[in-house]
Image (cartoon, rainbow, N blue to C red; front, side):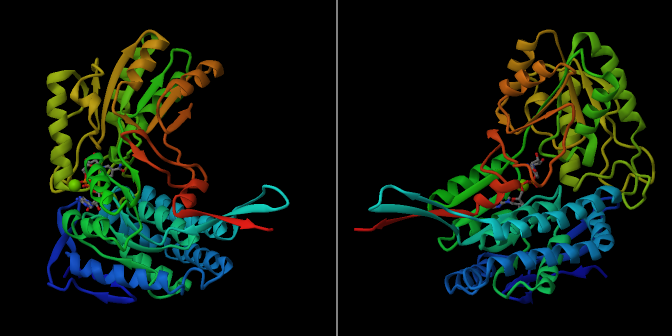
Length: 482
Ligand code: NAI
Ligand code: MG
């Protein structure tokens, strides 16, 4: 019997008012593991009203001290660590990511609570004396009722990096988790309740984007929407949010360049570049999927990538020896497989690229890690976000050329640069229009480091100090002293 999950609204566990539910699948087998409420506007309204009341009546902010808010988040960190094994198993079952990766996500979740627990007591304003007769202050106040609409690639992390920052800032918060992977997000209310979060501050509603997400964006009672997901939905949210001049932060996708110069340490650069595409089944917004390699290393690089892809162990993600699990859904598997077919007509298929034949894998949504060589930077597979384990390798000869190609894309989330020449590394990092640049590494996303995109990869930031700032308004208070 699959678990019947429920929404968490105003401290109560509830079904959708119309009783409608949807199925949640184990992507490794295609089995239904749970059902969840398909929430509609009337359900969302209940959560919004409670979050609004709690904020406006001041029971949360400023009714609690910064110290108390910080303590609650630190308590949540301890509870997540205590429950990490169970939460990691749940994340793997729901998303398909290998158990080792899931456990490391859960540790990141605990640390995010800890990090923003620390920030709660360190939000400070400014004071300036204009003369003896006049001065002003800048107060930092929470934006109010915030909503988080989140994706399935890092289910618990993507939710926590929003709500922990929002709670440190003093906002109340409504979460609409991804329909593909709601399980760990529905553990968050239990964790935060035990941690001491008052009723009415936090709500979680499951459902689909158009029916459960859109009402949060449209509501005049919601002050801010923090979204991570596709660029297309990011645009819908910005358009719909315009009616109420919603504060929005958008963490959208990317088609990030990964540049290997001929003077890089080849073993390190090849290994890193491959991981930058294949980690988490390639379901990473910052994946370095356009791999530019300087001509002297080009053939060696292709061989190394093909070899790397062939060695990756696909399997049941609960098995500790599995390195790559299934994609999150049948829809995503079909999408990625569709891009692989497109790629076969656009570039040279250097490695893999078929559906896995192993009988243990056929029930799940697996895709083989795939390497395309001699890709044109304007090909579909080099332009569009695939969000699966597909690498496009592009040769180059000159620094100017590779910078121009790297920037010739509508996205601008991340980039990686591999070279032992520090000046070349820094000059390339300066020239690239992306919000995150890694030098001789790829993908680390420390909680302390701000995360956000240039161009069509997003607006605003999460993580780091900026992550809290984006849940705060500034109020300038002028004092006449004569
Ligand atoms: P999506 O952008 O449709 O979904 C993300 C979240 O937005 C989910 O919670 C969804 O229910 C919600 N949503 C969808 N439509 C909405 C609407 N009209 N109003 C409010 N909320 C809405 O992403 P999806 O369909 O799961 O994946 C499609 C593609 O998006 C992927 O192949 C990938 O390229 C990209 N993607 C990027 C992510 C990132 O981290 N930047 C994460 C997930 C997907
Ligand atoms: Mg969608």
